[in-house]
Length: 177
Image (tube, rainbow, N blue to C red):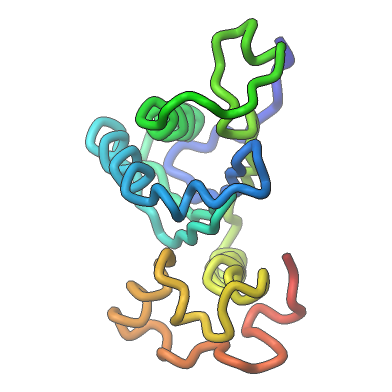
């Protein structure tokens, strides 16, 4: 087994990208109810704060803050992914490698994580998360994407409803994917 070097800073804030194995799938929004239930179940047992999140058809981005003294984000993602997968019927394509390990073929095995360094880094990643559905062409206005913490930011008065709505540029600077 390959061991990856991970930053294990307890209580840190992290940006994550988690992908489905089938990048053409719509499973995360089609079965959002199951994904939400998996998050809630894991958060009851292993709390952490979800500072920002967006769910797209085949991947998600999130900024999460671990409790003081806790650095185990890997446990949380493993349980979220497996909890979601267990609720789905079998039928996805499974490689021989995964079959041999008794794994499902729903999620990519790994995910991307980046420890948030400071307030500017945090703000840049929140903007990226909230703008992502527009960047992928799913909506013209950020507010029109229902599976986003953007609505929570608007309700809290942190962002206006027309934030990044229809402009060529977005607040995070150059558009990215």
